Image (cartoon, rainbow, N blue to C red; front, side, top):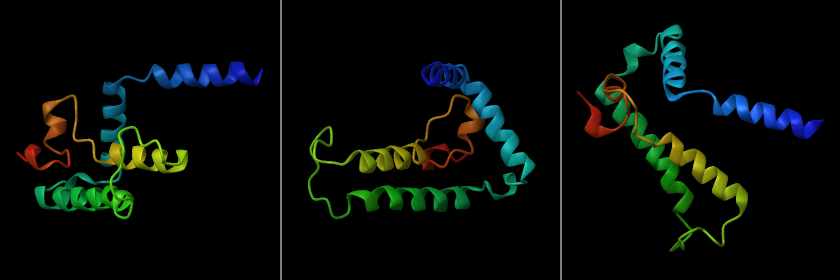
Length: 106
């Protein structure tokens, strides 16, 4: 029955909307009183740190072929995690105001 459990868990994850996720993230930040830290300066510094982490993955790899054919799966997964940390997209304009992307500072 292990395969059934995996499909059920997978379906539950798929049913979470971006709006629900945005709301949960907002509640998470509010519960911790993090909004006071969402200034343009702090968000820019956070973004620079995240871009640094992404850059570090490529630092000693030389040129990288499209599709990363010579990379280990663990390295690809790590890259995916860092790319998601650097994703500036947001579905609502009011959320973009606090997105750590320099074009979104309002």
